[in-house]
Image 1 (cartoon, one colour):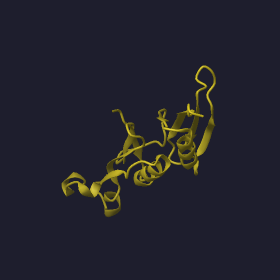
Image 2 (image 1 turned 45 degrees about the vertical axis):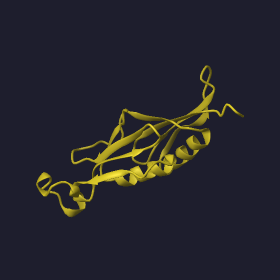
Image 3 (image 1 turned 120 degrees about the vertical axis):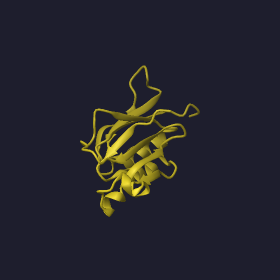
Image 4 (image 1 turned 45 degrees about the horizontal axis):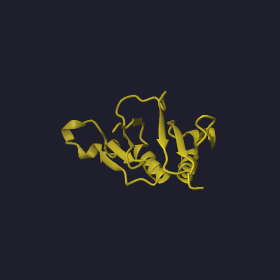
Length: 142
């Protein structure tokens, strides 16, 4: 399994809880800097030690994202987008709407052009600066 690793500037836990809500995933696994031995980060104050040293959240049954509140310089966003194939059109719409809260819709969810017109795709940048491409196939039983 490949999981994108997202670096945050203090919002990792908040972001992972948003992603959990968007995709209906499991509770995020979060390890704080305070979980490490004191000798690992001796210069951190109590507020910094409460930040996320490493975490991950599953977005689908087979994929998710990992990340941390970086202790190194981080530029918000990047040239990488996270592409999630949702289990249904309804799940894609739900996730898209939640990720768009305080974010920017880059391309609305809409029917893909031929020859890939058996589903929908759209792109949104969340409030943390990460771009998401969401896709889903149309229900074949309709």
